[in-house]
Length: 90
Image (spheres, rainbow, N blue to C red):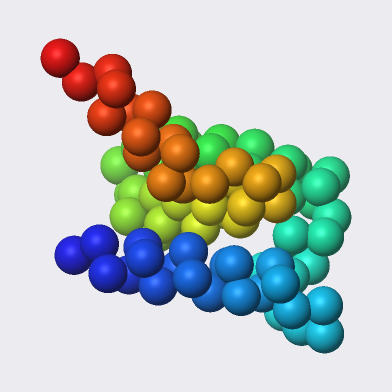
């Protein structure tokens, strides 16, 4: 089930390390104000979708994608986030 998330992380990191890429992901990685705006926008859209009980899965996927790009753009490794979550388990 989490293979897709692993693949997404791999693709984002490949795009981050490829200066020639003209992809949407690469554009987000190189424009901090854009990725911040997109994360905020997508979270708002998810909240609205939950409130309206429509399109929740689509909007949740958008939030995860944009959050993963935001983390990589800011040199925050998902592995470190997961380690922090593990420490918080009781």
